[in-house]
Length: 126
Image (tube, rainbow, N blue to C red; front, side):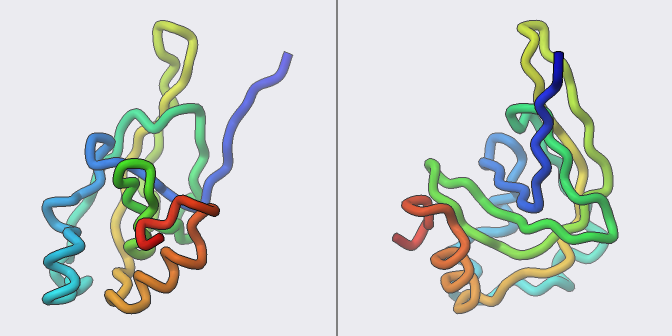
């Protein structure tokens, strides 16, 4: 009997799972780019990411991606502070955690990396 654990370098989450859309908003960012200093000492949480997952622990970076109706929008890089795998009552697992953002992409680069790094058909810009 084995176990299935995903190893991820990308935290791809929905608003419901904890993406901070109230802070990282594309319309606002496009008009007036959000600066990393705007997030100084801010810690973020995510919850109920399906399956058992291990994200790169700090000091190795992970990418931060907002999942908007199954389309990926890259925002920058993060350091994972804490992660927890929970066994649910139905036997499935979910992963939750805490992270800090260490880089925010400028709007032009955000379009480029989203277009080039998203899985085929999942780019927010295509």
